[in-house]
Image (cartoon, rainbow, N blue to C red; front, side, top):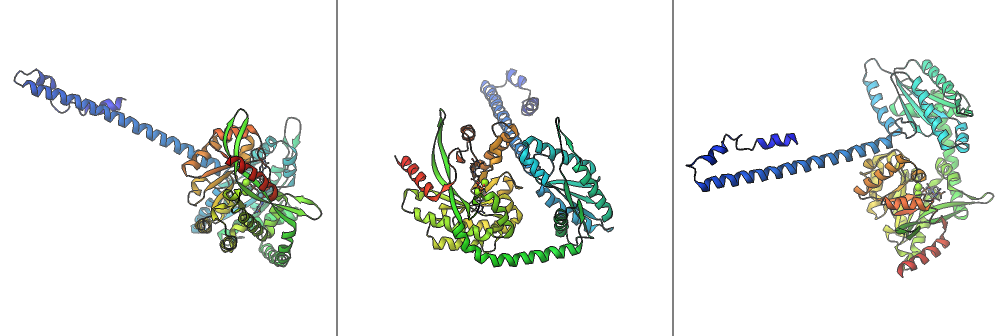
Length: 526
Ligand code: C2E
Ligand code: MG
Ligand code: MG
């Protein structure tokens, strides 16, 4: 306020060198001039008041913008730092490593850069399955703390996957010294952790590689450390340092595996038809919630594959999709899902289901497939559906992996009239701000947020920020994994009305979906 006053002084008659009192008291000044002076003074006063108000609004506006920026920054931070350990994640590491290696390359004394990848062993998975979340989170936190203590002064530490950490150290010594450091790390991380009534321990393995000795190009540093880690796990050794023979063996193995896969692929295609089935899970829109009841209607469905294994019965996707992804078989399986979903959509034309859409999942490997765009075009040509009835779901990491290729593909898909959703949003390495570059219509909020949204203030903040940012970017949000009325009510109150979850409907056979959605559609039409 004081600055406003000073500002208004600048416009006063006194400061303009006019003695107002003199003018008004001099008898020779005509009355009408005195009145004009008074009127002039009054209007200057009004002008000043308006100016002050405007300045105040500008200040408030800039405060609001700064607050929004701070919130956005906080959200971005939450998405690039691991929530459990506070360490930077894979995205930060990818960025850092290029600049670290660039610097090492330019340095006349040739700096070395070592990468140590540490992976917790399967005891971690057992602990994960048998103890509460808090125990697991504490173990990860303690592991990170132990690593921080051991990491050399010039090293950077990243938490890249749930059970994986990476240390990148500049000029940390000869390969033997790095191997020694890695062995110390394994010893320290494996030391039991004490809880009030018991103690727990996890083992770990480390893969080591160093630039330029064991990795001639930048990209090879992490890849070679990863190969060394795979060897350490396979040979059950605490630490393995990469050597060139190891790389050769891995490539040979991969080639062999590929040729077996190619041979199996032909056979697999005919098996897919016999052994796989597509289920549909309704995506619903909440119309209103009152007195413990939710009014909603179905707007679409997600196609979810099921494997009818001849001996084991129904196998859940979580059991076989990662394996299919690893071997590459996901590509033919995924196309089968796409073809089946589209041919189902075609049968809906002219029925009450015509307005619904179906989303199909594209795995990271499928998204990378060079025939993706031409295959989607083929599907659309074969089944004459309205392309806006088909939607594709991709994960953040698929998109982030090769952003230039992703942008080209997403644009091509968008131009065909098909919308893209980002699946499991919040679990990967991207941020909404980054995703702005892509024509994406919807984000699917991962169920891990929904799990504790009612009890965790931090999650509530993230969910609210994601909803508000998505809204400001014109993206729709679907909340996944709603299992209770309270969760539905919470999200509805936060402005998220599109929901997928067991509370409303489980995934079901196509026939069951048709019955459910048709009765739903009739209710809608009443
Ligand atoms: P997703 O794409 O995120 O699919 C949603 C998963 O959440 C489905 O698991 C669904 O059954 C489950 N779900 C839905 N509502 C709830 C709920 O309220 N609570 C809980 N706990 N879970 C809920 P599903 O069918 O086991 O599929 C798992 C994953 O397998 C999918 O996750 C998707 O990534 C993948 N998948 C399934 N079908 C295909 C496919 O045709 N192609 C590809 N590439 N991936 C697929
Ligand atoms: Mg999905
Ligand atoms: Mg999902």
